[in-house]
Length: 483
Ligand code: SF4
Image (tube, rainbow, N blue to C red; front, side, top):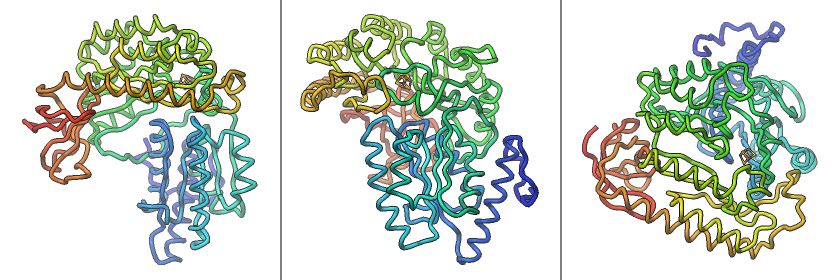
């Protein structure tokens, strides 16, 4: 494990080892020397800032980047006026790309004030050749660019950036490699994301993820269980198992284990109190998984099950491989088996060919399932995906009209559903001191609902009993009963 490695004892003058993760430890030791020398020269500690765009997978990747930077000797900066800034980018929607370009302009002005500042870009957006072309042409002040497949090489790339002149660029098309035992730092000491798989094989026709994150690769169960056990020993009580499609965990792997079986194993870890996971594809959600969730005392009563559309003809064009009826049957089965579960979803409005009658069908599914929340997005045309080439793109004003109509139903349904919790006494994991009022704490129920309650900050990280008193639309204000 990484914790047992003493970087200061690594001879970073020798030829670097070939095998991983020893090679990355070697480069981390080199980075540490560079940071030490530079700090001495400047008479202060070097600072670094990691900025994350996008999903939970990126958030977890950023914890790995932060872990490397911390081990290299950087102090965490609160803003982008730092010696090293890295943007971990997302490319699922076009506006995410535009935000990165906009913010790069600002970084350039900071670099003019501090010419020794280093700027790096990584993540999904960097897997797109057109993006790389644009950055090389218009943002040549960027020092380091890498993609999603070689993030484990961050220490090596960082070291190259410190030692070379000009932009360091390393983008891989794909990989089947998973490197274990690298450092990561956590945003919260009491909860953590755990990657259980990488990539996606589904090729939903609107989605760029399979092109930028590559094919599915599952981590070995022993590595996942070892990591969680170690996190629990450090005080973690809640884990979120992460993958683009966790329900296909173990498919085509060298070992034999399904996602349901993995959950049963994770449940056995002593000291772990809560298990969450994200994301589930409806086509792969097995009866075994429903039964494991039903029996479990640790798996949270929340399932995020992306619907995307309630119209079978649009689902077919999206290549989602289920029909509206199959989704409804699945949601019904889950609700029947686990009555206190909270179901949330993702919906896209304005997919090519979508007509108002398709939006009506989606609204009908929302009402029938009664989602506790739905993340609703306007379709974003991503170059390189089959949907981007479809001739029947929807006019923005038509999409917007459908979006507004649907959003209203989503909000009404969510508001209605959350009321069922009123008066109940439930466990909440206390996550932080309330931002608006320091006398209040913010906690999360097993079903993912947020509750604010009066309490002392020493309770952060603890699971407490809260009486849910007042419902405020999408969250509760409650009273702390006991630890
Ligand atoms: S399941 Fe579909 S939407 Fe999700 S990452 Fe894979 S291709 Fe994209």
